[in-house]
Length: 76
Image (cartoon, rainbow, N blue to C red; front, side, top):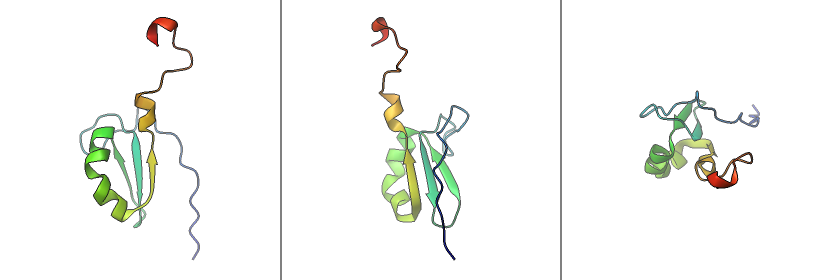
């Protein structure tokens, strides 16, 4: 059997951390086929263990420090 991974859709504000309910910035696709979502804090905390069981990790934590393109000069 061949497994094809399709590009994951971007995480949104509706995606919540499975541990605490905060906005999720990491999606972990498990080798077993399941999916877990984590906030940046819990993603970092559990990263070593997650790497052992993950088929793919989608990390969007860079969005926490990036400046939106439409931000005004006073917001930069």
